[in-house]
Length: 355
Image (cartoon, rainbow, N blue to C red; front, side):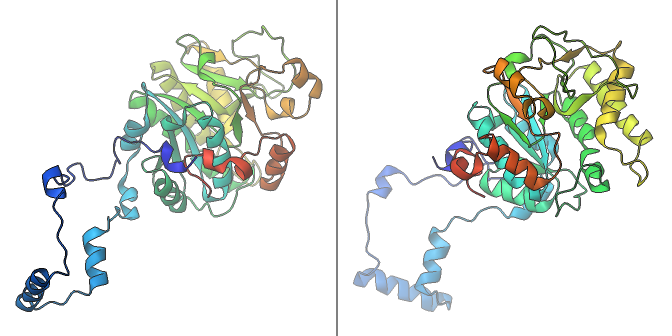
């Protein structure tokens, strides 16, 4: 199935809202040959009078070609415009991507398309190459929030580049909440096996998953787990659902504050996840939090390393996270080994097609 089937038929967010009206049916039925003596004489007279010579090829191109908006216009596309364009029923699904991770983006999108939620996806591009590539294939579904980062290489976990990349996440999410939308955030090294939205029960402020590998009972509590050895919880910051409540906004603001208090350094190679956990821990009594079921949203350290548990919970898995492994190529190989690398054989199921 070709990729254009996934593009919105309503409008392009940067297109002309007042297109030229099509010709009436009565006019379209009339046919004139430009090679008739009369037509050639009129054409020659016009060319002489205007003093301009149009080669036939140039005339044909200028009369019949459709000019696309310049890709540079996407530079002025705002987060508010983008969210308004893609949101459905007040909800948007967001990811943040740099150019090296476009194959992972496509893999993730294929899995979301199979659950029929692709139209509400917004790609927050971290570089202009990603912004232009996504909007070229899927107009309106990518936005860049300046400044653009240096994202020509796949940053390793724990590097300063990785910190710079992930530290912008709570600001993007807070902005979307302040615009009044529900927002789901996913890392693109995830694959959807089922629809996650039925699991977002109730009207809680923040929904999240546990990053610990210890097996929980199927009927485990949905409260924030107790702190671990480092004095904080081990909640994953890669799969979050937020409602536009004061509680969710408070968590995002606290997350931003904690990031400022824990900057990256060579001695302490920080990332965004500990700060997210400190924010949750400090606000647990003020905000309505909800831990998603482990069987449906397992961490990669459990799903890819505990075959017994996977068999016992077969048919319950909803989103698989390819974490607990470092390295771009190693993640791809692991997805391949488990039949979760969809890009090679199913690229045309993605709104982006084969990229």
